[in-house]
Image (cartoon, rainbow, N blue to C red; front, side, top):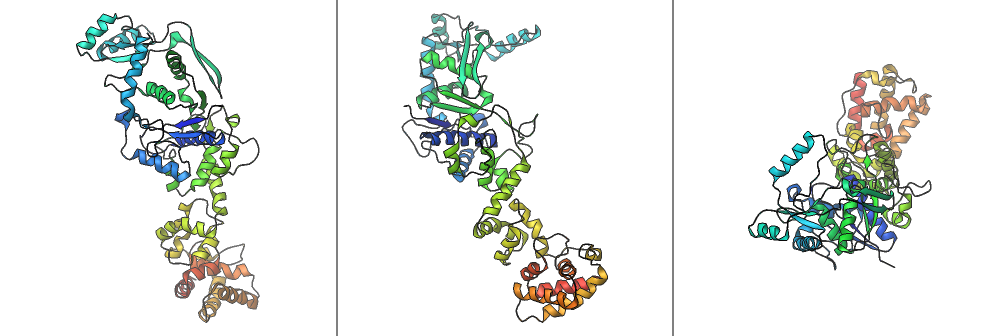
Length: 480
C-alpha cells in the first residue's frame, strides 16, 4: 500500500490567508489520518511577489497551530531542497526532455509580436491563445537561434485534438477539449520555471500522492495531467477544495482585514477557536458535533465530508465559537490571555482572580476587555439621570438616601474584602426594608458611572479598593 504524502506549498507573499490556512489544515489532517507524511514546500518562483519575512510567517503560523511538517526547508528530508528557488537547476532538463519527445518546444516570439497577434485576434472577436507559431520550427532553425543567443521560452505542446481529463475526489471526472487549451509556458525567458511547471515536477520528484488545493486550479489540472502523461509519470490523487466566501457573491477581502489568521489573533480570538471554525468551512464531520481539538480532527477528518459548495465565512458564528472556547479556559489560562488587555486598560494591578470571575462569563473576544473595564481605571462622566432605574425602583432622590447610608457603613469596615462589603450593603438593605437591587443600583452607578458593567456593586468596590470606592461614592452623592 502506497504511503500517503501530501504537501502544503504556499508562496511567500504575505500573511497566512484563511483560505491558505484551511488548505494547510486539510492537507495536514488527511496525511495524519492516513498515517502519512505532511510536506512543507515554499513556492517562490515568482520573485516579484516575494515579501521579506513571509516565510517566517508561514513557519510561525503552522507551528502556532500545532501543524508540524515531516519534511520541509528547515527540517530537511530525502526529497529536498524544499524551496523552489533552490531547485531551479532541475527544471530546465525536464523541459528539454519534453522538447526531445515533441511534447514541448522552444518559442522565440517577442512580446511585441505576441501583442500584435493578440490584438489582431481580438479585433476579429476571437479569443486569443498562443497560435503554435514556433512549434513548427525545424531543429536546425531552433539550434541556430539558440546559438545566436535569442531569448526564448519553452512552451508545452498541447495536442490540437482529443481531450485532456482527470478525476477529482470532490468534483468527479472533468474533461476539456484540447483545442481549448493554450500552450502554457514551462520555462520563462529568465530560465526560471513557471508556477505550473515547477508544481508538477516538484510534486512528482517529491513523491506526492495526494494533491489538495483550491478549486481555482481545476482549469489548469488538465494541462498538468498532460505533462504527467508526457513524462510517463504516475498521476497523484486530486482533491480540489471550494473557496471560502464572505457572502454568496464575494470572497474574503484582504482589504477589509477579514482574510488573515493574524487579523483574528490581533482581534482577540483564540487560535484553537479559529482552527476549529476554519475546519468546518467546507467539511462536515457527519454528525452534530462542532468542537474539535487539532488532535481530535486528525481522528475524524475524511474527504467524504468535504463539500462541493462554497463555504460562507460567518464572523458571528466564529465569535460565538470563540466565546465558547473562552468559557472553557482555566482561570489561569484566561488570565494569561487577558493580561495584555488588562495592561492596556490600566487595571493590571487589580485582583486578577476577581477580574477573571466577572469577565470570563462575558468576554467573547479578548479585545472587548479594555472597553468593558475602562471605568475601573477612570470614572467616566455621567449624569444623575443614570440613577433612575424602573426595575430597581430607584431615582436620584432614593440614590441620595442610599448613598448617605452606604458611605459611612462602608467607611467603617475594618477590612475591605468581598465578604465584608457584601454583608455591609445587603445588611443595610435588610435593615432599611429595601430590595437588594434598590440599594445596589445607586452604589454601582456611583462606583462605575455606567449602567452596564461586568460584575455588580460589590465586585466593583473590591476591585477599586476602599479609598477609590469611597471617593467615587461621595462624588456620586454630590450629583444627587
